[in-house]
Image (cartoon, rainbow, N blue to C red):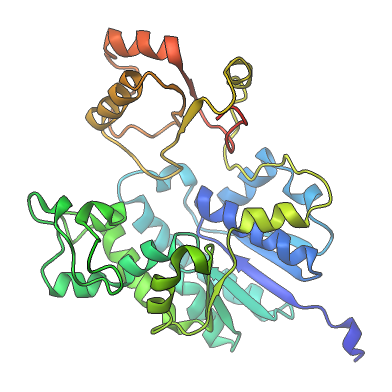
Length: 352
């Protein structure tokens, strides 16, 4: 076989949530630009959303393949109580056999899987394929998750009453300044039986199984914590910020989106009337949910800040109630004066 005809084939498997898919699609595009053949493996629901709401197929070249894996659960269902746990169960029982079949057939060179999908490592190990994990969170957040067993052993988790401001001592490299409130939200639980808490802790501790760990960060930003991570995962690749690298590689300015929802463009005219860099962009992302009381507290803060704001209020954000239920008059008036609410918006406008 002519060595020049050999094409590196990377299979990329993200966790099916907006931030994970977005970052790993950017990585896929960078690899495609470097003449890799890329198979991007997503759940059926994510596959359909990408086709409906993005130009992903026309944007990538012929060496890019979008592959759907059956999973039996939708993105909307994942945003319900215990939805993440249900998704993991579904991936293991339904998607895993299809993943095994897919990876066994084409000449895949390497698997890059989301670092919270150890089922991909199970399959890769079975068929002797190298696997590299990609984590879309910061190095500090990753190391906090990895340190959960030590925090539990020292009784620093779950956080005690008034524990938000207590300094935690069992996350190496951050012993002198890390407070309870600085932990990722999934760590700040009162119920240690929470499915999300247990899954993230268990999945993160399996990271050393991979040949390497890709982080969307850079050495100057998180160097001391990266040193700690390398004590358990020697091959750490800091390739961030991925969006900046992609922007530099593209020949023309890209305005494409990787959104899994229909984007609400009704805010553009409002944004165009605001002074440059004057608008505060507010979004809780695609998974997080808040109670009505938490939302109102946040809302009062925005209105009282006298700052213009664009707030992404996606469907399903409020747990248990509709957001429009009995909204105080002062909030409605303050929002009309300085704010705009949209269903789902891509990366912020230049006025933000």
